[in-house]
Length: 263
Length: 266
Image (tube, each protein chain N blue to C red):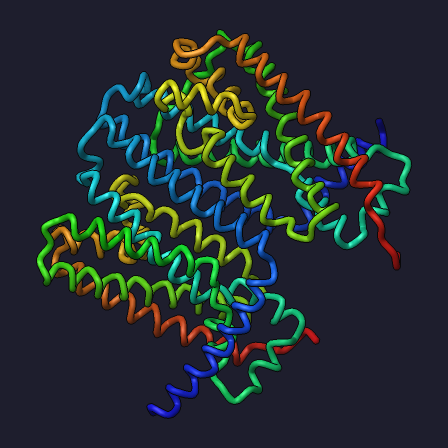
């Protein structure tokens, strides 16, 4: 077991090293993409302060809580983009038939198609997001237990993000439809930038219990500030476990139906 | 003119051939609309008057901005950079028609489809959530059409300029990404720009971005909050100034790009 893990880690690091080399080839793009992402981050941060310039509470959330929510969103979103960037490049593999060359290799295909293209551009931004998040969290009087629960629910959120990415891969196998699916996932995730309570009840319900964006982003922050009930904590772990299992099952069904049409 | 009308109808047919792609694109635009709409609706419900905006005026702003955003910003010019890179652009250069007109009519088809679908979406959305439909402000209708025309042409020339990067660099997506970000920040898609402090607003108004759709939307939704801050004629002057600059820059870089462009194997 340990030997297998070590071998997989070695392969993952090898793919990541190749990805780093590819990224380093276009310095102009690195600069412009990073600049764009920083601009967007600063702008939305500014929007939060603009909103709170006239009020102290929005939908039951204070300025500091919304800031931590926004940073948690950025952390989860960026982390999953760092790790799962290769999913965005899955479609050409399917339609060209190159996926066959991955499937016959003696390692799990997820090592290539899911985590085989670490995005180093986003990794650059993940570090400041992480420290900013810690800075704002430690400004508050937070008990060790709430912080622990927050971390556990953030990891839980990352598991849900993993499940969504595996669903997209499975959909890619069945229909070759990847680009639109992944972009819709990103758009829906963006709804979590602000408290889920701002949306009308029916939308809040959908994005908490059906497409659990709220569980991914809002729930960890609610737990940090003692807003989250025990029932919802249990639900969070249940839904992530369920979605992960379902996504892996979909991938397996996808593999059975895959006909290697390309090539 | 007949050949450009054919370009227009062919572009429409293209969209009908790839219906699912276009519908998914509209779904994405609509999801994007939900965040700012509900955020500002919640805020204005709570704070009765946010820098002159009340619940009714914020609903009106986002209603018209959803209708007009992709009527103005919708474009097919994003294809140009790729066509320069793979040499396909030669096919257009050999044809007896204006490249600028060709893309203008392709854009027009895109805009009309975007407008029709956005109307359908917003109508359905307001009906489902029982949100009262906002009234059109007819008082400034001539200004609305003036700023709308300005926005359409500014968007066209800005998009062309970004695509012409393809003549000199293979990195065509990075400048466009920056452009998207600037649009989302400075064009008023996330909030009405006149909510900003006056000094910051006066600075943003010096860039071409607010002239894309913030001003037309303001003219038809709630022009009063804007008129307390700035004179409409000076806004029109500034917008026309940007249009003239972008028009000449687009022509200049097109000519310059064609001279430096070479391709083989087609």
